Length: 355
Ligand SMILES: Cc1cc2nc3c(=O)[nH]c(=O)nc-3n(C[C@H](O)[C@H](O)[C@H](O)COP(=O)(O)OP(=O)(O)OC[C@H]3O[C@@H](n4cnc5c(N)ncnc54)[C@H](O)[C@@H]3O)c2cc1C
Image (cartoon, rainbow, N blue to C red):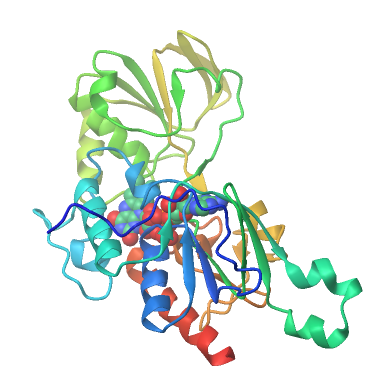
């Protein structure tokens, strides 16, 4: 097995001559689902390109170093290629290795470290100057502007996930270097007074891991209890730590201010201030919705679910598709790898049916 990869980190300036020969499909994002869309596009003979702003499976790369998936490994598999992991539920490092090997094996056309900045419908640009007949022909032609160039494509799949934008607290002091919305590794907080804000899986996993590395952990929880979606095998652990007082939980609490050495919050309308060295504000992540609306994709309901047809994954903008966890809008728990790995096939089939 050679150490060389077929995946390109390109300095391409978009001169694939796509202006004269538009691609069939550009996939934005090389997460597990962007990769699975690329495999399907390749299998169906589509002329496609994946553009990824970071490294391959960038979101997974940015997960906590010791993170263990809640899914068992076979539920993370693509194309029925076995995902062997040491434990039933794989760890981040194993998943990075699996998806890298998959992308390599299928010799996917992926350009890394290139961010898509915007997408323009070319027909809109030229509508006034173009005959109606030509406009119809151009109805589904897009110009993709990236950090490295521009491309033309007949279809676009947006598979950009939700992990890039953290839900913010919007309180004074949030910008201090001691505050982070991403948890990397527990060792860093050893012996420190750490406030973990949030009650769902990311917050609870971080609180337990840091407590076990000697941090003095306070959990600041807005509601009355630890979140209902906390993994059933983790729940007893956190509840026991709270009950025995190893981790201090403040319920009904909302952070109001963070300073260099303290954190203030209101609990049942009473303001409290605790000593604090570090804050992990793990209150969730959300997809880049303006990226969708600027393209004309409508967002439905309070969950802001981007409008799409469940059988084709095409949005209300013809030629623009969605794949992966972005489909859930603000309901980031609705889609995961197991139930979105079929999106790529639906999209490729629909593109072929239009040809
Ligand atoms: C801590 C944690 C644990 C999780 N555990 C599980 C689990 O056990 N099982 C499970 O199924 N799911 C799990 N998930 C959800 C998981 O993140 C998704 O299922 C999976 O990553 C979805 O893949 P995706 O391809 O849709 O999105 P992502 O993996 O997020 O991929 C999106 C990609 O798009 C790229 N991108 C974004 N914007 C741009 C742009 N403008 N230009 C170019 N590229 C861009 C990003 O860099 C990223 O690589 C977990 C999530 C978190 C946060």
